[in-house]
Image 1 (spheres, rainbow, N blue to C red):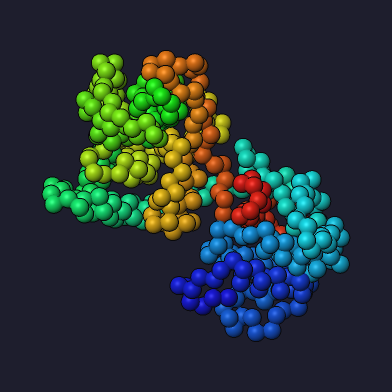
Image 2: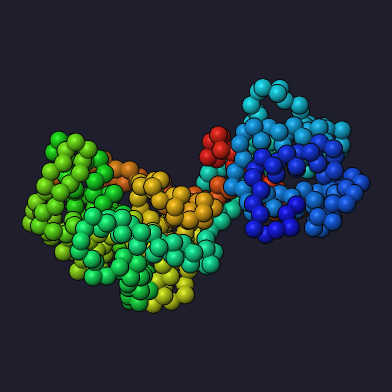
Amino acid sequence: MRSDSDLIIDAETYIQVIASVAENGYFCHESPPIDGIKEYGFRYSSGPKLLDELLTNLAEDVLEISSALAKRLHTAIQKGFHDKRGGENLEEQHQLAPLSEENEPAEADEIIASRVIINKYTGVCRRSGARLRLIKLSELEGQELKSKLLALANKEQKSFLQNWKVKPKMCASDMLESFSLWMDKRKGKPFTSIIDGANVAYYHQNFDDGKFNFHQLQFMVDTLEKMNETPLVILPKKYAQKSFNVNLGRNNRKQFLSQDEWGILNKLFHSGKLYLVPFNSLDDLYWMLASISDQVYSRKGVSLDVSVDDPNGRWPGTRPTLITNDQMKDHKLELIEPRLFRRWYASHIVNFNFTGFVHNERVDDKVLFSSADFFSREIQSNSLEKKMPENHARKIWHFPVSDWKNHER
């Protein structure tokens, strides 16, 4: 479909082409070959393998489709397969009605073209029996992300200092690289949870007596350690001064550190659980980089990821996790291409919720975590875990739809 590897085709063009082939029955087992199609670089000229080939190309260029395109694809498959074996249950849907959900397990020989709900804890599609995967950053993609972070560090520093005559002693990318080297060369236990310190300390503090709350930071560290995690707090250096300006909506004022707050800072710092981000640097870039750090000396080549059946009861998934409620919308477009950002975000981000402190007092001692995704929100194929007859499809494709819910496909 594309002979130029640099050519990217949009979702609508892909779906219109695939739908045209589908409604003419060329994806059926017994369908005749499409004349001349191999001249355009295709390996297959008809049948399910041609469908897989087209969808593989689609998945390389497109992350998700719209509900209108999902409806177009469903209509085409229904038209092309309704009179074939296994396609008897493909019902024509009203042109103006949205696709209805079908979650009952399909028969062994049934052709599936359904709107489904994926179990968010297991990634299993009940309709097909397929299990969706969490697609992580590859080693090369991790390196690309790191290079983008370094470039963005310099860009943000230049923007921040453009009205200042004083030149920085060290460029922002060098400082960020220095942090990366520290992560790689430090000894001891590898970090399994990175904490966005400012995000946690400001959480639920937007009230008259609210503040940058260091007790909330200590609370988060203690909670994670009880869960057998090894946390690292990333915190802008301005919050490690005797006083600093706090920004809580309309409540902007100077905050002075108490003896207790100094005690928390010193305890975290001297125990190796705190990294202070230099002035005029974005802390976001530091905790993002920390989440993909190799931690060479401390990790010693051992995977930090946690399996579903972990004997210590830790929540499963990628490590390190990144504890933050920051949606990072300001970085998303300029940081990396959307597929890489989505893979990084889905694998590492863990959101949190707790009752905000009033000074050093809290109502309860629970933190609720919304763990990183168990499967990726991008077009993907997966093999069926159960055995199927030789002439049946081995791959099941699932499509995220931009205007459906997160766990719908």
